[in-house]
Image (cartoon, rainbow, N blue to C red):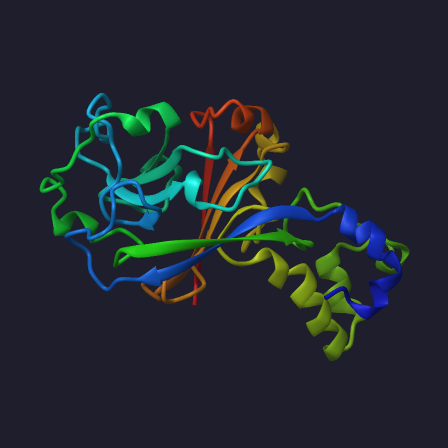
Length: 265
C-alpha cells in the first residue's frame, strides 16, 4: 500500500513498478535420495544434466553441489524470462559465500530432449556440510510486481518531501513511528523475499553502485535467507544474481554476476 503522505504521487510510483515472479519454498526434510523429477524446480536434489554436458566441477576437479534449479516452463508467463529452459546454480563443496564458489549455467530448450544423467550416487551427503541449504525444497511461483526498494540502486523515485535525502534517511529522520512502519513496508518489505526479477533488498548496499560495469544489470534472482526455514538459521543470507538485459534476451547466462550478503541474526 502506498504511504498516505505519497498518495498524490501514485501515478509516478506506479511508473517505477517492476514485474517479478515470487518464489515460495516447501521443505521435504530430506537430503537424498531426491524424489522429484530431474527437470523440476528445486533447491538441492538432483539436477537435469544432459549426457552431452560435463558435470560441473571446481578447478581441482571436485564435483560441485547442485543448489538451485529453476525450470522456466514452471513459472508464470513473463515478458522478461524465457518460456522454457532451466537455470541452475552449483556451489563449491567448501562454499564460503565467495563469488568464486558459485557456478551458473543454463540448459536450453533443445537440450531438454537429450538423454541425461540419472545416477547421482557420486554426490555424497558429506559434500553438503557447507551448503546453506540443509534439505531439498520444492518451489512454487506466482506472478507479482515490486513497487519499490529503499536499497536497490536502480530505484530512482524522488519527491519534494524527501528534500534531497535518501529514502532510508527520510524514514529515519522525519517520520513518526506509524509513518515509519508504513514507509518501511512499502520501501523495504516490497523488495524482500525470494524472487525472479523486480527490485532487490540489500543488507550492506547494492554492489552495482560500486561495480560500474554492472550498474545497468537487472536483478535476475534473489534468494532471501532471512526465513530460517530456508537456511540453517545461523545467519541471514541473501543471494543476488544480476544479468544484462541483452544477455537475458539472448539466453546468455555466462556473464551473470553473483553477489552474496551475510549478516548475523
